[in-house]
Length: 148
Image (tube, rainbow, N blue to C red; front, side, top):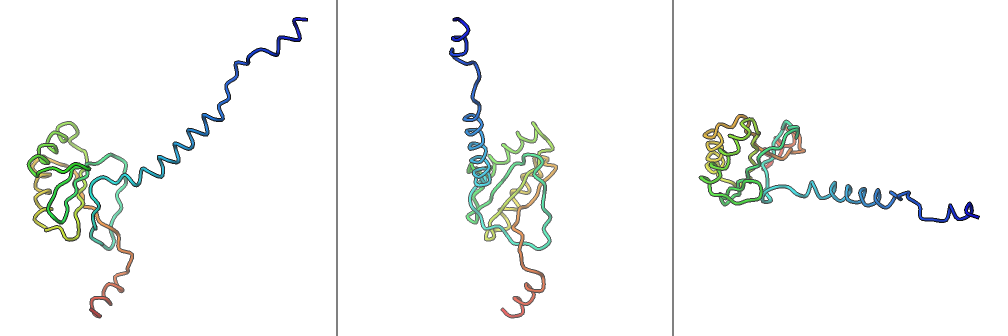
């Protein structure tokens, strides 16, 4: 009699299918949202020909300069002297951390130069400027110059 009731009790097996479903949905959400988390304000970057793409192997500091001359470290608005102080602190912690500067097309050159000088003052080893790759060929650009 005891043999018939042995298989009817609670089972210790865990059904992992719902857990896998949730993890996959979260993975998809993060894959979609992560590119949208572009740090800093929305800027119209300069278009360039023959731009070299940089690999995103290491986390970099992103400094954005708006056309109004505002400075952002990541998403946070900073005054230039405070920006330099924060860069100095970061360079003490990680002296080889790359810095990337992105500036609007209409940003005065002086504002970008001041950021580059701040990077030089704190001893930054790697500073790069961000741009958008222009899809037009050099011949198309020359034709536009002649026509306009």
